[in-house]
Structures are given as C-alpha cells and as structure tokens.
Length: 141
Image 1 (cartoon, rainbow, N blue to C red):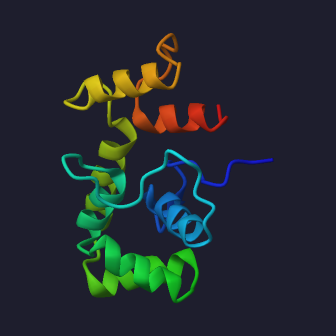
Image 2: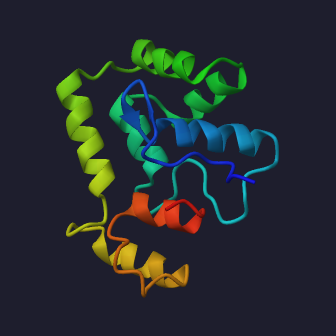
C-alpha cells in the first residue's frame, strides 16, 4: 500500500509541495490524515502549508474551504492564481529551489536534525533536507 500523501517534490503547475497540501486537506476532511501530521499554521512555527499559501497569497482557511467545494488539483491552483497571485516562471523556480533545499545548511538545519532524531533517522546522513526526511519517513527512497 502506498502512503496517502504524495512526495513533497511532486509538482502541480510546476509548484512543489502544493499537491501534498491538497492531499492533507482532503485526508483531514475524510478523517484519514495520519496521526502526527499538522494542517495549516502552527503558532511559533513556519510550516510548509503556511509558506505555500503565503507564496500564492491566499489564506490556508480559504484554500481549505475552496478545496472542500471540489475540483482537481489544477482547479485549486488556478483558484489560488485568481484569488491570490500568479507567480512567474522565475519566482516558481526560486520557490522550488528554496523548498527543495530547506533544512540543508540553512536556519532550519537544527530543526531538521531534531525531526530526524525524533523519527529515529539521525543516523541517515543521506537525509539533508525536509523533503528527503518526509520521503524517508513515508517509505519513499
């Protein structure tokens, strides 16, 4: 059985992590979001959910409401583009590079090390980003 959330590196409209957030919203609405997964904003923390919504200039709560009305991933992204903002190709390239490298030699490195240790993966020197950690935790190589 495959894990219910797609890899964070999978793109929707060339944007990483967005599809995974839609997966989380859908699973949460069905009462199937795995234990330990947060949804949206966490006080005192900048989550990937929060970051992608700020990148697209939409509120997470509004995206959730729109998502629950139904539609494809592409419909949700188009809604974000019309409601919030439509980043150009260069902005998306910078966004993707930032997100794909998050945790590697940056201010989030200590948080990554802690989460690796909490997951019992501190010995995995090949895990140097949060995307890699998510994939490892969820059984993807």
